[in-house]
Amino acid sequence: MKIYMLGKGVYKDYREIVKGNKNITVELAQRKLTRNVHLSHRVKISKDIELCFYGKLHIYIKNDKKIIKIFNAGYTYPWFKRDKEKYNQLNEVLGLMKKKSETTNKLATNAQELTEAMKDLIPKNITTNDVHFICIGTDRSTGDSLSPMIGTELSRLGYKVDGNLETPVHAMNINEYVEKLPKDKTIIAIGSVLGKLENVEKIQFSKGGHRTGAGVGREGLPIVGDYSIGGIVNVSGYMEYFVLQNTRLAVVNKLSKIIVEAIKNRFPIQNEVAI
Image 1 (spheres, one colour):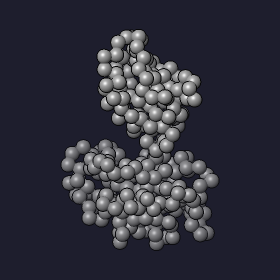
Image 2: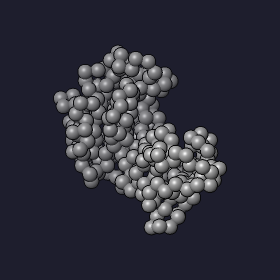
Image 3: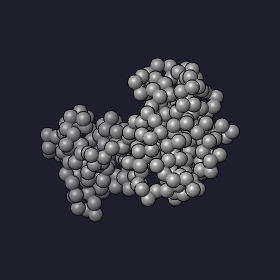
Image 4: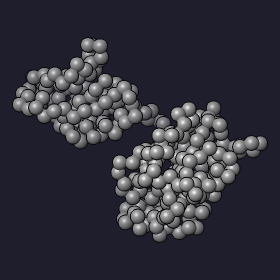
């Protein structure tokens, strides 16, 4: 199914929403298709989509030549945020809705809390043999060395992991590693992140991938993993590269120990018993 959007703002937002969904693509409607469209006119965009103007924009979503949804999009881009109900209706049709009660991330301050967060968000049937870790970061920056340190220890313990102090996974080679990630495993990505002052030295566990390079404003890098562990090593908002490079090693070392301990608890190896 293709969804055509008139405004660039809406187009970009929906491109982000449907990322990874192979059944849906979002394209920007060509201006020539909608130029000089008057009220009470319809515009044929494709065999799947028809725009209809009756004072407001209506999006007709078709499937097998049958209209499955008529969506009142409102006048202009502000509807996207103004009318949350209509926004949710469209997402529901596209199968993109999340349950309101669903918690997708949790903050932890110690190994026990991080263990519980992983137990809450990762299904019980996913065991040690089902997971593969990818530790993203480089030891060339103190703050960014958290993941390589964790990867080194996880490798020593016998976990399946990419990224360590000897062979780090970073912005220059991450695409190569992502392509080789096992398709039959649950991928847990680990990385350093910057955050609010009150959250420094805490750990965020999320259902969803790690946004590579987001902390320092890098764009075009992949979102990696089914789950992610982010160690908040310092404060965000200003001169992120400098902040990462000048992060205290003591903070990195503390977080690495907590994360490794929690992983051992949730995914015990050999004869170890989970807490």
